[in-house]
Length: 156
Image 1 (cartoon, rainbow, N blue to C red):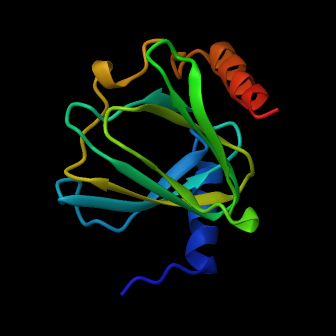
Image 2 (image 1 turned 90 degrees about the horizontal axis):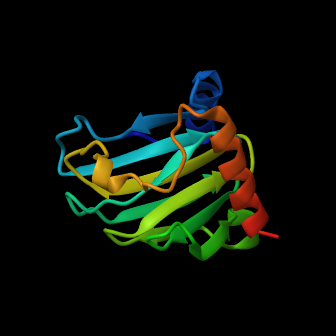
């Protein structure tokens, strides 16, 4: 049995803090080829989760925030925000579900955020058709900063 407790959340947070990407998974599945991928994601403010979809192959996604806060966004084909929600367990809003094929992304609102994520396996790396063409490249720090600021402004 693996228990999700403060110690595991703290370890996952430390690993995210030490990661150049400011996020780090703790996987419960044994292999990326498992039929279900369930994991904790430690997230720090400033991490960039490039907007994407899970279309080929189709994958629904479920995220529950265990600690911290995130904003979840759904986008149309042109990159306009069509839905948004601040996910904050302290406010009674615990998670979100994204059906396969929807463009989505998130903004970390609090350092030390840890989410529990479930997706159908096996793991499938994002292909170019599943990465939003209107989103900045993770390698372009200036464009990423502007994009994250745009998402934050959507919450005002």
